[in-house]
Structure formats: structure tokens, C-alpha cells
Image 1 (cartoon, one colour):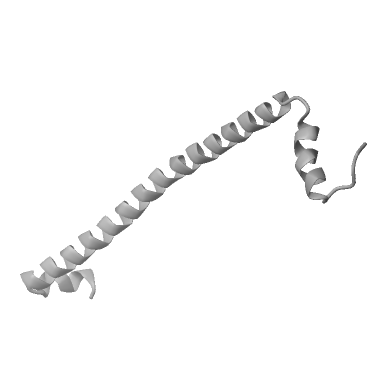
Image 2 (cartoon, helix red, strand yellow):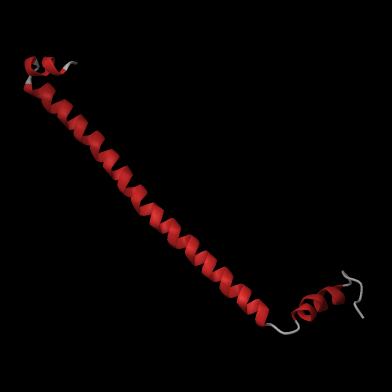
Length: 84
């Protein structure tokens, strides 16, 4: 329907088309708002993961004799030849 035909159409048709336009715009706005919310959440999640990994690496570096801790169970299970 052309815009010039809207004047000749009845009020019911104009109301229906306006409702359809508003519903479509509402869906677009909702989608845009969700995208705006998801982006910072992903950024926060990635930052938190990096922080946790950094803390775990720091803890691992502080463990003394960590090679012994890792090899003892494998030696006991017979998976790795003895390092002696």
C-alpha cells in the first residue's frame, strides 16, 4: 500500500498498520537493548576468567617441590619410569 492510499483507507486499516509498525519497532529496540547488555557481561566474564587463571598460575608457582607432587602418584602407579 502506498502512503497516499492510507488517506483513503479506513481508520481500522491505519490503526492496524500503526500497531504492526509499533510492534516491529518494539522488537528491534528490545533486540538492540539485549545486545547492549550481553556485550558488557561477556567482557566481565572474560576479565574474571583471566583473573582466576592468573591467580591459579601464581599459586602453582608458589608450590615448592611441585615436580615431586606431580611425579609421586605417577611413580606409584607405575606409569612413569623412576626418576632416581
